[in-house]
Image (cartoon, rainbow, N blue to C red; front, side, top):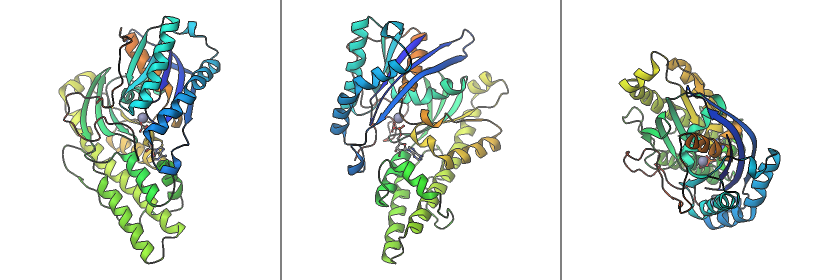
Length: 370
Ligand code: KG4
Ligand code: ZN
């Protein structure tokens, strides 16, 4: 099967062509034929995504991004089996742009189309990149979300933990903003941390050791601000001071995540349904979302997986942030399961993966905003 995937839920205008199938024994096989991602630069001056600017920028870029993805894959619309598009959660103005483009192409070329949960795109990326079988334990960390989910099958998500305030990507972005490092903050903090001392500052680790394994990152952000202000007052907020704060911040984030994941892993592996499917195999650990590109975090997670006696699946860096390939792949899984949508499908600002979990702020909200 060959699908075009379109992504416009936040500040990336993206399109990709993916070929693949789910074999009768359930093995996922996917190949990315093209993957075009245009990251909007228009938000840098504001230190966060401005929804109206994002929507307008998607309108300007969507046609050329889709055509570039088709050209890169040497593909005609008649070669496609279906179209998949992010239809939520996210910024509604951007989602409408992607949905209208997908519906127009589907109507003009008589193709089935599917509205895909953007979070499901992140959640299933490891199946596209590493042919990973269900079930697995997923750490989903992006600009709008921080969750730990047990993924047992297509559409089978059990949320074990979630942020109760800020998303992790948001904490990176806000830390970068208050240190004057620019937007998006994650890569900027990671870069600054390279020359920093991770042991110089001790930042708080809220909820550490507590069950359920939720996250809280707003206190960490406040502690970073207080530390930066203290250094400013001593006139020592030098480049080295900023680097030390970034390195200490990243070290704290890694320690918080490790603590939460150890508990989530215990919860997941003690379930009899999981044990039954695994039949003695270990439960893989997967990381996804924009923050999964962070190398310090990836290194910590690899060490943690080792200690838990399991493997870490971390998708390549170009599949961590928002992209069309993950949407095409999730579409391929859904289309293989016999799904398609009608043209009256509407965008959804909120759309949690685990519909039964208690609503929390990081549970399925829109992308990062100013
Ligand atoms: O998944 P994504 O592209 O968009 C959302 O769905 O939110 O994630 C974007 C987030 C931003 O907050 C960005 O700062 C963060 O991912 N990010 C990183 C890194 N690269 C992107 N955070 C930490 N380290 C990175 N290298
Ligand atoms: Zn995302």
